[in-house]
Each structure stands twice: as C-alpha cells, then as structure tokens.
Amino acid sequence: MPEEETLRKAREDEGEGKSPSVQAGEFVREEIHHIREGKHGARSAKQAIAIGLSKARRAGVKLPQPELSKTSASTRQKAKRDTGQGRHPHKPSAKRSRAIMNALEKEGHQSVSSTALSRQAKSSASKRTRKERSTAGKKAARTRARNS
Image 1 (cartoon, rainbow, N blue to C red):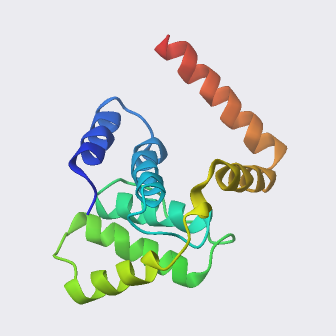
Image 2 (image 1 turned 90 degrees about the vertical axis):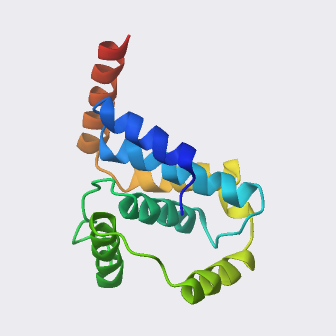
C-alpha cells in the first residue's frame, strides 16, 4: 500500500496536469526509498521500477499499457490486472502479500544505488531512437519554458 504522502503528491501532479509517467514517478521514488532504508530489497533497478509502476497503476494512475513489441505477455497481463485493480480496488490477499515481502526481503539493496540507477537509465536511453530522445528533450524544454 503506498504511503499517504506519495498518493497526495501524485494527486497534486495530476491536478497540475502533469503526465501519468510523472505521477507514477512518485511511486517509483517511494519504492527506491523503501529499498534504500532496508524495508525490502530488489533483484535489479528494473524490478524496483516495475514495483513502483505496479503500485501506481493500482493507485489509479492512468499509465498506458506496455508496448506490444517490447514486453512479454506476462508483463502486459500484469499491467492490465493492475490497471483493473486501480479502477475497482479490493483488499489484497494477506498470504500473498506476506509471501511477496518475504521473497523481497531476501534480495539485495545495491539494486537502487546511484550507480545501478545510472546504468539502468543509460541502457534504457540507448534503446530509444535519436528522434524519440530529441522529441522528449523538446517537450521538456517547452515544459520548462511554460513553468518558469
């Protein structure tokens, strides 16, 4: 369950008209803090991000479904389930939650070190085309100009 502060910040972002990915960023940030403070671990930076995105979808952030060409069927299925959970919430299974936490507690905490996150960001960026990176930069510049 996400912290109240995270939900508040995500709602605030939504109210300001920010994109769903920015809203979801709050949940990913929370997950990184949890791993760093030792609440649980993660196998990789990618897993930490995935947990945050899953929490965001379950909290009702309208994130788009993962792209067909880039993700496995099971990942798309999980995202679909999380989105549905965000629309019609129900109490999670205590047994399942406990099993997940027990598994994550056995994982390491280096997965969200600044080095690991930097490596993840670079590898993720390298998979994008020059045009995609350029478009993202231009959009960021427009947003900066609008907000200053």
